[in-house]
Image (tube, rainbow, N blue to C red):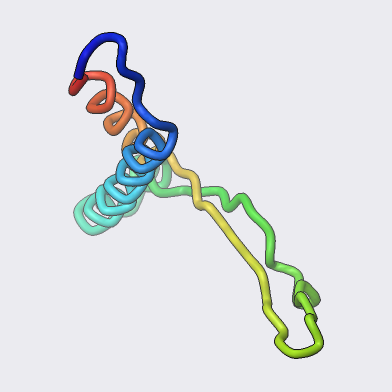
Length: 93
């Protein structure tokens, strides 16, 4: 890629999304091999950010009714996955 060409925002989000997926896979890998304890809790404890937990979050269009919701679980391993993806994005110019 030439120095004057910029990457599209869609490509950047795609690479970061792949990083999140890799972080989730790494999280499952760590969860299966580490014994119960502080280290496993540190890597696998996650916080959910999003909406849709309320049972009254229906969108009623009179013909169709849609329930909305979107959550993102963020943990240390998912942040590591995003960091690795960002590194590959910067490395492969």
